[in-house]
Length: 573
Image (cartoon, rainbow, N blue to C red):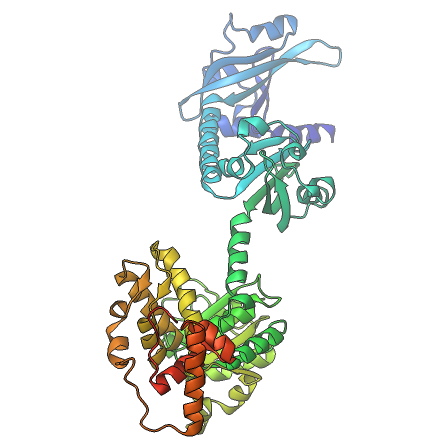
């Protein structure tokens, strides 16, 4: 039993272990020896080792002979053997005396390995380490490893950039001395992983850099395990969230209520409604002509909701053919169609936890409307070619410039889907119905394009403003934005003049200031005109002050000036 166990132990070694008697006859030959030499144990037992392997390690003057003479062990003697195929194998060999129960030396035990094989393994390991190091050095996430004593063993260039420390400054240090954070004092994610042996993902914490700056980071942790399955340390990857946080804050600010522009009464009611529904997950239908800002409203709802830090995913239902639209919305599995080499998640799955904006919902094919209805009612669907039901938590905001009631009557839009979408409806007025907001929007776009084009433009002349106010804007706010951008390209001074405006605006609004005389005015109109003229004179033709004194908006005053043929003074707007 003991001998069998000993044989099993010897056979578990990768190195060769060979026992010889004093005449160098082989009395034991391990599996490692079989692997290195190419001989089977049963073919070599009893044979002379030196003669069989034509080796130099047992020559008369070899250090190994001292093992038999005085019982001294020999380490790392270099030599060679000839294997079963006649190939020379360079070996490094250790020798120990083999003794009987009485303590007499009756032979020796050789333990040797293929040196060339070791070199090959070392070269392969070096190459693999170099490859892994190249990967670690190329990724943008910081990577740090520690041993079981919490000492840092590696620190990649991204970690250097994020923390401000050089690798040579931190290698060998306790990680808490480098990764300074309140979490180190209590809820350290890497310590929790080392204790529970469970990885941690996306743990957010604030980290203090070398220069004292506090930055937010996202941390993932895992164990380091050797090939025997022993835990030898831990690895922590971390990502700088400061840019992400800044972009998120900019998005939140961009779509905050303070940046929704409009003094018009209809727009004020819409802003109030957006504020009411944003905290909920209610489905919203946004209607309005092209260019009225339907996507802006959808984003404002999302970025002022509890879902603000989750995805906002937009898809234009009119931009894709029916065959592609279904796979874009719901995704597909590998093999679902000819080109489906891999699986791909759809927009609904990508928007999980956030908001999906279905633009041009009126263009959605009838075949897909039924599937969308199921998502609305049950928050689930099957990807194209899939059998597993995917559950999602998504807020749906849809938009259209079509009359969906008419589409229902014409059997182009499902009635049940319409009523499921029609929970909260926001109807955006066209720009021609909110002329009062045009100066505000112009000022907003001037600020944007002044930064974009690095030009000192800061105003619009009175005559140019009159043209902009009188234009019907079939393309709504989007067209106004493009008109101001066009003007910025052509304007070289500080003021946008009429000749800087697009041709369609100048040709569509042939206003002749001072010639719009009304043929007949009622006594009430004559009195109103007289009051307006008197207030204008008192305010030195400052329309802003005059409108405030008359308790009307500047746009209303502008309309009355036009109605009564009163010519505004240059620069008085």
